[in-house]
Length: 353
Ligand SMILES: *Cc1c(COP(=O)(O)O)cnc(C)c1O
Image (cartoon, rainbow, N blue to C red; front, side, top):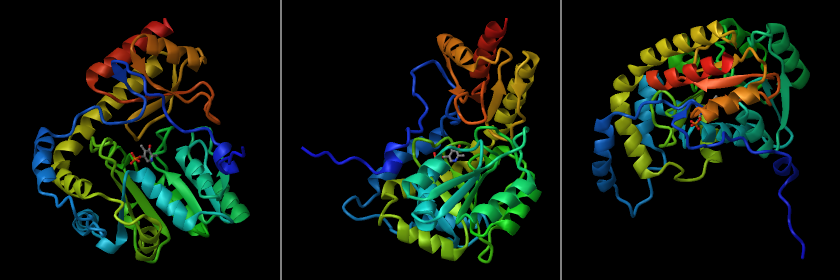
């Protein structure tokens, strides 16, 4: 009996996923530690009851896109919404990546760029970062002229390093990139600058955002991209019809009525981020400055795997990045609630003693 194998690109790839272990303190996937506002949760039953379930959703998601566009001073035709920003990245790569094209990124960065690019059949090229994990303008120029990528990713603030890129590096990239530049701003609310106001029809720049982090809605799966009209039109062609269900459109619209409450928590997270960074440094860890809701650090022992296990034994789950390229010995901790962070820091203190 013959057995058909998946395409080589699929076989070659090990899955990107963080182990979901059931522990008291989960600080491994950069979610918000806070539940969404109770008033929003209570409104969901009425929203569900109001939907014409026998009808297809509004394919254009017009109301939702109008609302998001308005918040950024843009037009509906400059916004595409997806089931999480990962789906948005996939649509960008289906439309602009694919076989015969090259996709560029600077390592270490978010692993899904390379993974999704390869799934679409594109070739992946990587550039290096400096030791402090910022970009080197000369390296940007080198990669752009050597590989002429159709799509280049810039994650800002960068996951998993937390580093915020100087604006001048995006300007260099936009000047040199022969194709589309994607700035992934999954953590924009924790940072001190955003590229969103730069989006316009005559610049090959798109900016992606998610509801999964600041907005406490990782379970809802919503993300979006702001970009030139002609880019958004291409994403609409790549997406499946009715990809956003009616409930999600209405529930997301309702959530946008509570954004003040949700973004108010950003201050708290930033304070806790400073606390974690300071205390880890005091324990002798190497710590990278973060503009996101997580902190990358290298324990002083250099043995990340045993620190990861030691934390797990104490009921704290963090992300082990030590096997990732250029991150030997590194762990990444998501900023949690004050008491979760205390549990993490207490455990780190025990492990460093
Ligand atoms: C968490 C994250 C995303 C978000 O994904 P969703 O699919 O919106 O949950 C995208 N990009 C980066 C860099 C992230 O860390």
